[in-house]
Length: 368
Image (tube, rainbow, N blue to C red):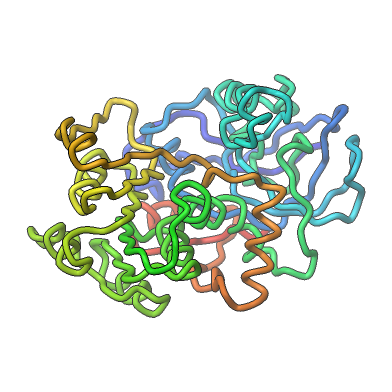
């Protein structure tokens, strides 16, 4: 079949995207699903910094590529057991094979065949169903239809509005998961979140959910700091202040128990580390350019028993965590709908990514 989608053929074009038009809306031939795969009618797809980092070249990928990884849709045809036409699914951006060493240990985010497929721009089995175009993180959700591995899909409540359902596949799973899975924050412990995009605010929601206190939000955009306060942050600190780290340490009585860096910046990661107390844990979620480095006083790891941890996909098991987070949203305990800034059309994606790059939006969602 022929699908209409947003194809990136060259990374790193100069901004603004509204002028350089890095995303071209093209018609691409999509082969039918093979064994273990699904054909899905895409209903909605979120715009994430992970997409932007491919567009601007800070996260190099094979070209050309049909972008979009945070998405939801309806199964049209299934070649996989457990899925049938009419099922509503959300996608995880790491397909988990279920058989490699990390998968056997319950660490689906680190699936080795899944990582290899994502790097190669293929589906989990190593093939491409898009003619002449690579898949983005096994999803390629900026199109009206997609063929995906069933290992990338999780069945969800069909009554959930698609513009909300899409958020659970990346922003919510990554941010909340960093708190509850990676850091395992306990009630009464202090937490600080550096960077208040969709993932950062999801981490803040996760910290509030588990009863962290105080909860400190740090960003350079005043409107995001105001939103963080309304979502439960006890303190909101402007990162442009020269003493922002000192303000965090004061707000947390000497340093946070847990710091979450969601910006994808080595500099901000160093600030997050500096904002933790003795025995504190720093969790980094952002994806910096591969050339960036992170430097800390090595002795502090031992003498102060500090911990630095990476968190990918929120250390999640998608089939477990996506339904669980949706249930918490339904119960009013995880108000992820507050992250939705606006909905956009396929033809307006370049302008929408300019807004994302400028920091004037939290989560814009493409409706199809």
